[in-house]
Length: 307
Image (tube, rainbow, N blue to C red; front, side, top):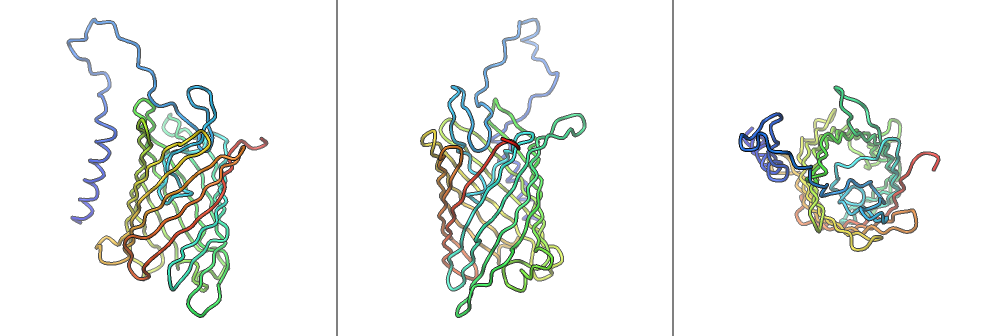
């Protein structure tokens, strides 16, 4: 209980630091009564699309926000209404003696803007499934459909003047029925409910992203509930090239097992209308199998259906 309270207090301080206390609606300063109001200041941070977007000068540039993929940390941004984003990724965990690979991960996303209590709520619908493989010493690779995932990302706060954004991103991971993924060792038994809060803050020279999540196993008594914390930074080098990095950690809430801390660096490169990305990372702290090395490569496609 004390650890949960400490986790909540920590996140409250982070939110207060980056977003500040909101102004009270309708409140007036007596010194300003009767004084002509000045026009609102210009936007400090122009809203941009994921993938490739036009900056304030109308020039197409690449998005440098730390995001998943290629990193583990994710951002609060969602596709625009009717826009799709599809990622095709291949990655591997080259830890010894066991090696896990994803030959192909298809991560499909679609943007919606439903109205909730009279307000528009930018939302992303996500569906993901991988073709995975695992290899243990003196055995051949076992390949099949790995853990699929379904999620809804709700971008419930977006302040362009402060360059700040928040999203809640509930997801469910599960083994595809009839795939035999659990028996092959490429998926966990049962399901996993993931409840992340995503934060983004834009600064003059970089974009900062932070994630905090609770991961709750369902129908699997052998796994414990864990927590995730991830921090990421990104910066555009040119209009066609961006670099980003993150550090992320997982642990059971007693901090005695299921511990993993790793760091990644990634590059995103625009080639015509397509974005290519590459990631490399390594574990800093790990229970069980030591010395995880992570590699990943993929491509991102965005656009409207029919275009």
